[in-house]
Amino acid sequence: MDDNNNNNNNEDINDDIDVGRDDPGAPLGEPDDGFDADLPEIKPTQTMLDAEYFNMDDAAEPKTRFAEKLFDLIDIVSGAFLIVILVFTFVLRIVTVHGPSMQETLHDKDMLLISHLLLNPKPGDIIVIQVPNPQYDTPIIKRVVAIEGQTVDFDFANWTVIVDGEPIDEPYVNFDYLREYGSYVLDENGEKIFRTSMTSSDIRQDLLPITIGPGKVFVMGDNRNQSSDSRSASIGQVDTRDIVGRVMVRVWPFNKLGIVKPNEEE
Image 1 (cartoon, helix red, strand yellow):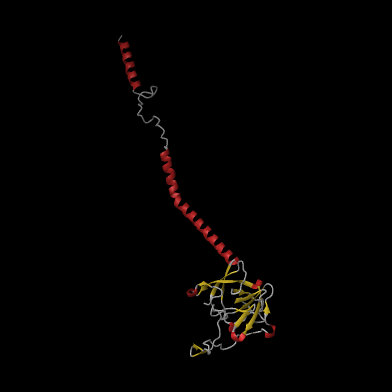
Image 2: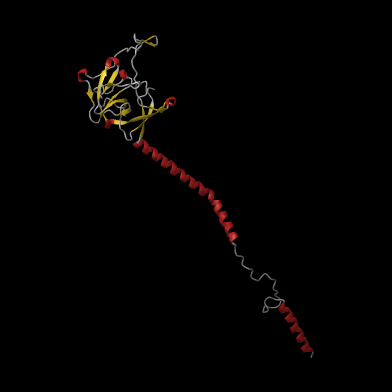
């Protein structure tokens, strides 16, 4: 009877022990300390993922932005350079004045911007010409006096150019007036006296007036007695196909920067 009581007591004790263990089948003497249990899985939240994404992006963003700006700058510079090349190839060109033939309108070493776009020379235009004569190794700059179909005549003694029977007004011409002690010498009518006649060069008086041929222009320098132009046999009437361009702007010297207007004195 005592044995039965002992057995019952042992079972109660064992039951009490089993209740205190996570694994009832675990051997006695190996208590569960709680660290062998599986820990709950920690899943990253969207907030955590966003934070990680933006942190990575922020680190790379400065380099990416710099590269993008660099490529944009290269594109802009390359495009601008190409435009400049095209403009100066097909539209504009810079030339330099050599010699005194266009004084006082233009002077030696002046730099000019010329245009050969839609070139249709008119009387009074200042043009640049590539003379098809080995005597002229650089382009020359002259003023158009007459165009095809017009007639040109001269009163050389009075420095007068006559186009289609009418004297033309030329305020830009550097007339060679007589001076004494730094002042002009005047005639009895108060008019300036010419020191010399205008140079006729190779023009024959018996062949005047001259008719300008098709596709030709007659040109002269404003400094008439210091100019080789259409009065000279080495140049003659200029073929419009030999015109490089029309003078638009003086770009040097800077103190004379501006548009070069036809039919106006400086």
